Amino acid sequence: MKGVLVAAAASLVLTLLGTPLFIRFLVARQYGQFVRDDGPTSHHTKRGTPTMGGAVIVGATLAAYALSHLFTWTGPSASGLLVLFLMTGLGFVGFLDDFIKISRQRSLGLRSAQKLVGQGLVGVIFSVLVLQFPNQMFRTPASTAISFVRDTRFDLAFFGPIIGVILFVLWANFIITAMSNGANLTDGLDGLATGASTMIFGAYVLIGIWTFNQNCQTNPGAKCYEVRDSIDLAIVAAAAMGACFGFLWWNASPAKIFMGDTGSLGLGGAIAGLAICSRTEFLSVILAGLFVIETISVMIQVGVFKTTRKRFFRMAPLHHHFEMLGWEQITVVIRFWIIAGLFVALGLGIFYAEWVVGAT
Image (cartoon, rainbow, N blue to C red):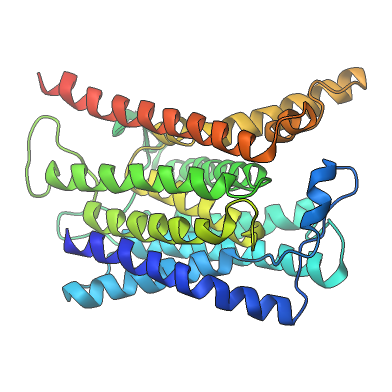
């Protein structure tokens, strides 16, 4: 439990103190945000604001995880390292996208196909490795069973061991791509994605601690959880939560720095990795409900426009629609944070209710 507290505190301090140093570094090299002219006019003032701040979030998360294990003198787990690999790998894909944008001063970085290939490569490596590294009880970081708040009886291995692995890789990559792109779409207003991600990681801290206390490996029972490295996943979530919280100090309106795709893809990847390793794949859809809404709004906008040549929303993702209706940016952010918090509360409520009902 000490490791969780150390990870959260260390990442918080690192981002609070490290972000202004990174801002100076970016300003000195004129690495600023490029803003599209067809967006809300209020965004034009953001042109030139330093971006790629997600590098601080990822770096602080990695450092805090390491410091936590040094403080408690324990070794890292396969689950924790794989989630951090997914976060870092997708963050690197986002970094390439950001760097192309700022170096060429255009809104287009990596092309969609290139970004998907990068996400897919990192996702496939993660998906294959997460089924390896069994511990003494022969439990791997993830399983081929589809999960909600725990593994369900629907196991992809039912179709055969090889086909089961292939189906799992496809399923895991769908989760990873959807979650990282959802975070990326949400990152359009000062502090919006950062604040929402902080709440989601906070939920995974609680889930990790709860599943550790009710784990089948140490506390077997009718409703114990088959999560392999619960407390280490809580440490990862705490490190990411603290990093987001500290970064929010500088990213809140008016933002001194943006996380960029480096941060949004990395954070989405971390959430997806936590969902897969904690066996809460469908629960993550509820916990990250704001990301889902933002993604659906884009899908609706594209689908309606291709069908009727008319726009369903004034602008997508959804937060821009409300800006175009005349809402102040800070109003949109706070109200969307409230929505994100309600989804997190609902997800945690369902998680606990399943245990209570199942335990009776």
